[in-house]
Amino acid sequence: MGEPLLEEAGRIARVFARERLLPRARELERHGGTPGTDVPLIGLMRELAETLGLPEMARDAAQETGADGALLASPGLTGTLLYELTRVLPGFALSFGASLGLCGQSLLRRGTPAQRERWAAPVLSFTRIGCWALTEPEAGSDAFSLRTAARRLPDGGFALSGEKSFITNAPIADVLVVYARIHGAPYDGEIRPFVLERSDPGVSTSPPLDKMGMRASPTGSIYLDEVRVPADRLLGDAEESGKRTAIETLLGERAGLAGMGLAIVEESLQLATEYAKERRQFGQPIAQFQAVQLRLARMYAAQETVRALLDRGRALADSGDASLAYFCAAKYTSSTLATECALDAVQILGGNGYTADYRVEGLARDAKLLEIGGGTSDIQLLAVARELLR
Image (tube, rainbow, N blue to C red; front, side, top):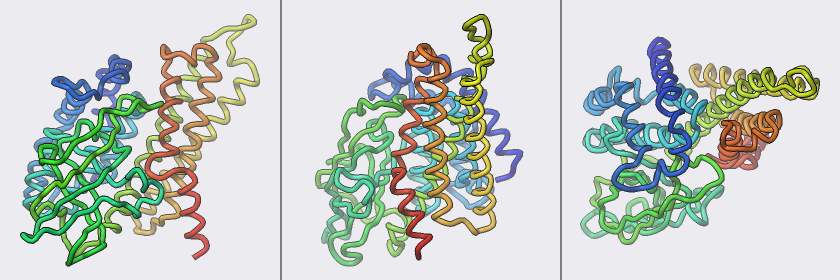
């Protein structure tokens, strides 16, 4: 995807975030993702998709492989949108990215022509909301010990049973990409992704979890009770390893979360700097005090560190030299510094920073998810160590 197109997409998302999301941020955090007849989160995601021109691109991309397909499959597009949206409301960015990137792009990249037309186009256009489900109650960091089963039926179809947990958009999703272990030949014991719909008999979801942060993004569980589906619900090529496709998607998610970390660092630094210049104590702006200056300087150093990591990551990806170790290290560093910088911003704002009237409070709560979602910080470091010791 060309730089001018990315820049235009970023500009649209930036304006939308400041003009449409910021005034409704507290509303979205309180009940934006609660299922019902009128979900503010869904309406705003569809509005942004329309403004970006995603419905037209999605229809074209589902029917042919060309410019629109390359554009919508581009991690650059998702990363650009996530960055701009996160600076204003990380929870909205998380839900938008899960539907567009994790679900929609998985369907577009791996789906058969019929699957792309039936599911990828509606999800990428936000006519339907998507989610991507790998995690289970007993398969979190150990993701591939999953127990959700896809029992082979005599007619060639499958009956899926199991539970998925901590799934972004689960309470509002129409289309669900779900990973399950096949029981029955062929591929007995192997993991594969399946496409399910909320309307499929046996599919149900939990209410949104009451979370510490990312409250504008509904997270919940998916329950599968003998969900019988035909063979064409197996996503893409049946020969392709589901474990491999999941790892590829997780690497993309980690890159996206690292970009969200940069957005939180930058926004925290900007808000803290502006406040420090305006807030006066002892007859002068608190920006004149060395303790505040040192916090701001550390935040600036963190910002430039994460920027450099992401710039090098894009260069490595473009050259085909990207490694698992690098992206895990980048995700770890970005998420850790995002949390530290958001908390530093709270400290600079003092009592005001601890209230919901000032945005750094929400950024601090939201930042913590980056150290947990898409693989915890400890898992990132263990993955790096394993690569180094091969």
